[in-house]
Every structure is written in structure tokens, then in C-alpha cells.
Length: 122
Image 1 (tube, rainbow, N blue to C red):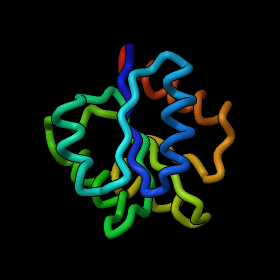
Image 2: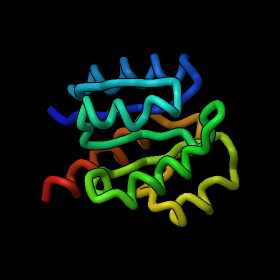
Image 3: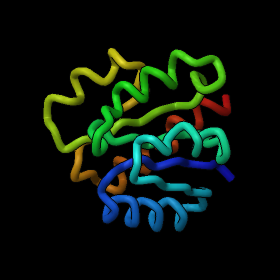
């Protein structure tokens, strides 16, 4: 069972994603605080991270860049998401593997999640 960590300061989005991904058979952990991202990664060891671009007091792009520059976490695919239309243009500069616009389409989300997990396994 693949493990997915979802990081977003919107608790409603966290609830929906946790329910949806759990129903699809994933082991899911969530956090609404940017400062919890690294401890959660260390304890949960996710196979994929879904990361909001803007998290209260934190920039998800900076978190992504830190993850991708650290040998112990650089292999973990990161899909960033945001309601800000311009965010998609900048995420690749920070090492993100993909982007989803909010509000997101469930089928699109699942396609991207499955694609990133498949790449990692192959």
C-alpha cells in the first residue's frame, strides 16, 4: 500500500483528500502545519507528497526545494497544488514533479497520483 502525505492549511481540503485517498486504498497522513512537514516525512516515510503552495506562515515551494535538495527525501515525488493561477509556472523551479490547480478535479488528481507512484516503482 502506497503512503501519501498531504500538507495543506485548509482543514476541509485535508479531510476530503484523506477520505478520497483512503477510499482508493492509500495509507494517508495529513498535516495543516508547514512546520510538521519534515517530522511527518521522517516518521511516516511517504511514497508521495501532496503539498499546497501557500501554507500559513510557510511557502510550500521552499519546502519542496528543501525536500528535493536533501538526498534522503529527493526521491519522493511532490505534487504541488494551489488556487493561485500563476503558481503552476514557478513550481518546476523548486523541483516539484507535478501541479494541480484548486479546486481540483478528482479524476485528474487520481491520474497524477497514480502516474507519480507508477514512475517511482518502475
